[in-house]
Image 1 (cartoon, one colour):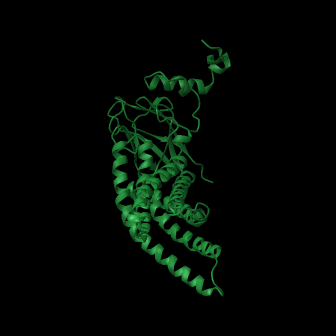
Image 2 (cartoon, one colour):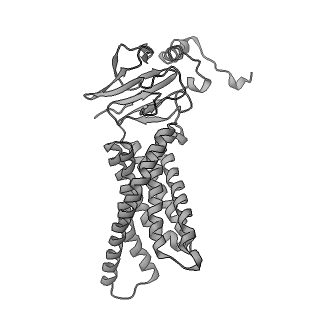
Image 3 (cartoon, one colour):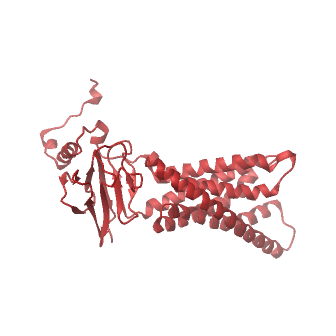
Length: 348
């Protein structure tokens, strides 16, 4: 054995609450914890919603742009109508991706397809209607600004005017795209947080869209459009994830298994835990977990966990609960072979 693999502990370490809790968790979860599961959970970038929502925005923009861009100059003739259609398609794929990415990262494939389908449909409607409203706003604003100018507009002046008008217009589009995940997941709070994040991301993306077009010029404008939409969708995805992450009050962190480090924000009341794909916290490939094994329910300012496992059992801090138990911050929950940690922000 390599000396680097040795873990040295003394007698005092063996008697600490942390070691005792890990031993009890290993016994009650009825499996041996691997080496990494015995140490405190570290933040996992890949499972951070700020990261994966931003990446999903980037990918969705590339997909939407690559599908429509060849049609903009089809037959050697520029089709201006395709540019507006490109906006609709990009926002449609953006809505689908940020609506379904959390389910995908949680391993819930059935829910991924369901939320993606809702995101596509609602995103198409919002992209069409929102694009018309945003386009009309941009046109009116640009006409008013140009009329207020004394002399002819320079190229840089036109860019600045476009930045000033495109930013609020696309903030409006981003607000809708950010709200759609809440609709897909039946959560008003997700929708509200998404609206704020999408609005911020859309404003920043819209503000830099025209400068990107200026610095990445090409004969057809394809490259600048691709980079511009990629930046726009990435910013929307990033801020949707960021606002959601900052606004969370109560969540459960997975402390074991392939989703170790993944956080499940408590939005629904009750929040279902089980092996059914309809569960809010989906625990898959565990024969010891019932379809609906437990549920976390709000009780005043506190939250309680209710055993719904039909005798299999739910453990909190390594003790089997009798029906239900009020949860405290940092309580450890064992469901089947999975170890979760309940966390709640302190109210000031």
